[in-house]
Length: 107
Image 1: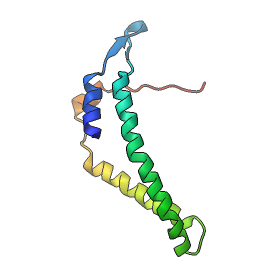
Image 2: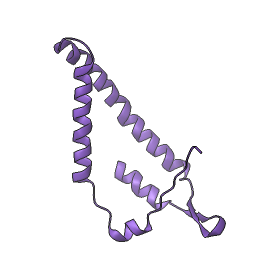
Image 3: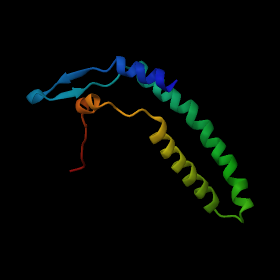
Image 4: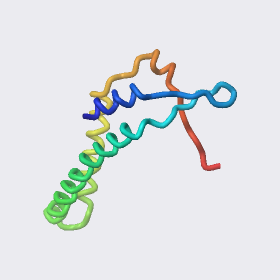
């Protein structure tokens, strides 16, 4: 499902030229944004509930406190990082050359 939304977003990606020839990405159509938010809601809320349901008994099993739940979260975060590096495709050099960084600051 994530790949479908990504492909849809890429197909609807448009740019505009602003001052001094700088190109700026336009926001995605509302359908693409809605699909992405729906997917994150459907996947995120049950996952948060599962973690909440598991962390209580896990804390009790290790003598109370929240340390065991934090350690479990750290382990899963590390596994997620390793899996993303291993499983996600590496961008091609020509794609990296076209990539732009949009940034801002609080100054």
